[in-house]
Length: 485
Image (tube, rainbow, N blue to C red; front, side):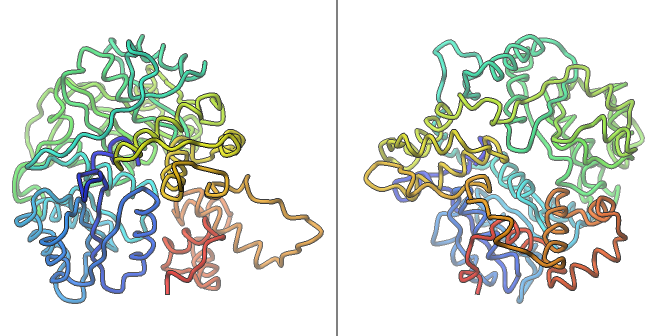
């Protein structure tokens, strides 16, 4: 889990374990979602109806409620609204088949949901949902997670673990640019810790005692994203039943972290550019503007220069955002930090479980050091959570170490396996879809085929309308399907 997701941890049966209730009838994403929650260290409970869900909420400690928009009996939104009244401390996420801005606003106004998740969700979207639920205010205080391991007692950035030259050089830059008022662009691969660097910039500034809030640009439809950033007035559109402050107004004199900025639609890019130029915001439906003092830290895992050249990102906005660029090195470029990170994660996991920190055997550590970590620090964290769960007698050996990447799998001899062209085509299409987050239009462009042809191929492969499950299977071919039946 990310640092924000860790806030979901609560005291439960003597151990700090986050718990999520998944409410769905026969939705195909249910099993996949529960598996992904387990991978992230969240204990999933299951309910098939609103009545069963309310019964579980009244008897069990639940931190987060995932609810299907369309239940067999009743509305998922109605269930979330009821849960909001009876159990206000439970985070609420609506899972819907449609990325509908109006539906999203209605979900926020009526049920106070912290996130609208489409049924064809991606791992990053699920992480954002967990982070949004963790950041949502609760009526009662929750236990604070175990603080991260400090490298030194006078460490100005205790939330960032690492002693490698790459990470120390980055933190020196953060310390230099933090006190300025300039816009910062943080780049880096998925899972490398861009938001931690964004928060470090905030902590190094004179805004450290003010609000730091973040939003994922890819997590909201365009209309809802505009409302999230700039706010809206009552009656501005269907579902806007009251005035709402946007994040820029909420974070006045603070810092806003705008993640996945490359996914922002061009029309929203123009509005963001105007805000950066003038400092003024205009809520949807308002006839007047207002000035706010907000520092923006943007982040992306894409090459924005290439996005500009492709016409998907405004060049003038790029120069406004990249006043101070900061690049987070991937984990494979700071291998010397792996032992520190492993110790950090194991200490936190052990403290949360009320257990002594397990011993990692040298052979297991060598395997971790040899891995290329395409998922970066987030992947390492998930691996350690799983290894901790499988450990016995206070030791983590290579035997219980999960298979955490293709680089650990034995290479197949080319002359021993010959695959047919349809099999190769299917794999190539699914891997391309994985690479672009199952954006079929973008995938079709990369494959140089029409969207219609892509849909036809997916139908021939038997994976149409099963993007989440297909992606899950494609990424985990070694897993058995027994548990899905």
